[in-house]
Amino acid sequence: MFTYVLQRAIVLCLVTVAVCMDLKKEKVSNEWILCGWAVGSFWQIWSGGIRGLAVFFLGALLPLTILFLLYYLRMLGAADLKLLSAVGGIIGPKKILVCMLYSFFLGAILAFLLLVARRSLAERLRYFFHYLWNFIRTKEFAPYGLTGNRPENMHFTVPVFLGVLFWIGGYY
View 1 (cartoon, rainbow, N blue to C red):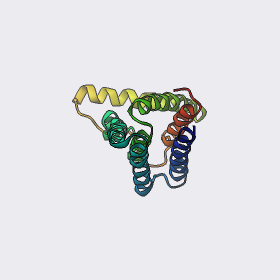
View 2 (cartoon, helix red, strand yellow; view 1 turned 180 degrees about the horizontal axis):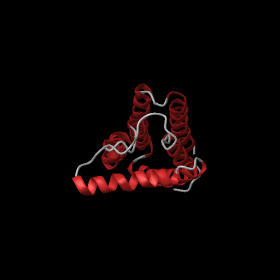
View 3 (cartoon, rainbow, N blue to C red; view 1 turned 30 degrees about the horizontal axis):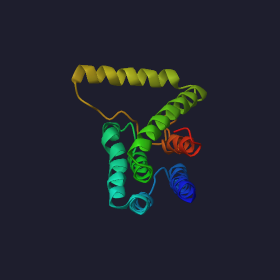
View 4 (cartoon, rainbow, N blue to C red; view 1 turned 60 degrees about the vertical axis):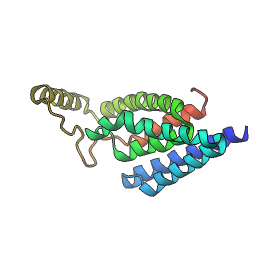
């Protein structure tokens, strides 16, 4: 029971601080992510021995591997990708896959609500279809995201935080 609570407290602390950094400075420090990876590797070795190291690497590498294309196209920030990797190192490969699904689902809902509230849904749909048309026409990937503090840009650390809350709440 103690390890169950401790693991959840560690992950909650990791994502809470990351969200605060992201909202305040629009970035999550690499030192914080490195701390998350270090804690994750120690956690997995402590709870599973040498086998735990494999669980750490699988959990940490899955988000990096699966979501790299979204990062490459600037649809997902590096900090978001690294945060999911750090969380995956702590909770393992099976749980990080579900956490990513929850995070993207909750992120889609949150993004939709933000676009409706900011009255920019039609503009973003036009931008998306224009992006798709350019890709079909040129067969070349171009960066999708527009940089800067724009109304349509969302801090994805928030949906990751919400996905972690669903894990803590026992939904997966």
